[in-house]
Amino acid sequence: MAKKASKKPAKAATKKATKTVTKTASPKAVKKPNKVAVKAPAKKAATKSAKPAAKAPAKASKPPAAKSKPPAANKAPAAKTVVAKTIAVKALPKASAKPAAKPTAAPKPAPEKIAPESPSFATEGAKAPAFRLPRDGGAEVSLSDYAGRKLVIFFYPRASTPGCTKEAIDFTRLSAEFQAAGTAVLGVSADPLKAQESFRDKFALGVPLLSDATQTMLKSYGAWGEKSMYGKFFEGVLRTTVLIDANGNVAKIWRGVKVDGHADAVLEEAQRI
Image 1 (cartoon, rainbow, N blue to C red):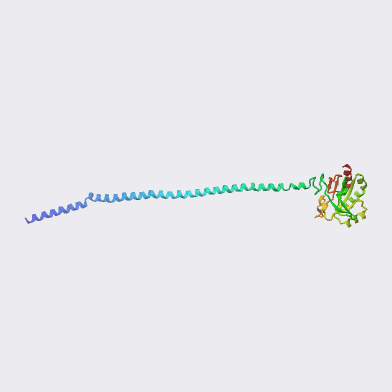
Image 2 (cartoon, rainbow, N blue to C red):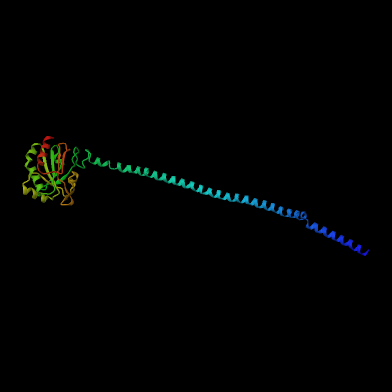
């Protein structure tokens, strides 16, 4: 009786032990907590990680778009300034072209000085410039002294030089013919009166010789200017002859005169007018 009673409790104890073991060791009981524990965090982690990942590219993509806009805005003003500069450069020649027209209009008065009405410079068809100069012997001669008569004035560079001597002798030789044609003859140079008188006496010249030491008359008749000799340039008398008609107008001017036959050509013109 004692042995049977001891076995029953042992069986009960083993059953209880097996139940507890089976409960703990059963795969179902283990899997359930694992599924809940593993899946729940995985989903949450996946959703949490997926949302920031989607937001991150969106946020990252927006700044470049915002950064790309400012360069476009910066380029637009640059183009405007370039256009403004090119317009300003094109406008400059127009502004400079307008003042350029003014200097061209300024020289117009220059021809008026030598117009027929002006006596300041000798030109054919214009009034002869007035003058008053001393002549050999000390008397004075003026243009008004020959009013109503034709007048020949020959300008020569220097008294007693070969070319000037020949020219003065030729006019002296033809003095009677000039007088018959109602024409007076005068010789003018920049020599002083003493040189003119010596020139007259040496070659027995029969025409009045005027001294224009200040070159006033010489310049007004265009008989003073730049000359050259042996490669040197200087100012002096330019060999010139002027024929003035009875009305006081310049009928003809000879410039760059060649002495040979010149006096005869002037006489023919004086007889013609």
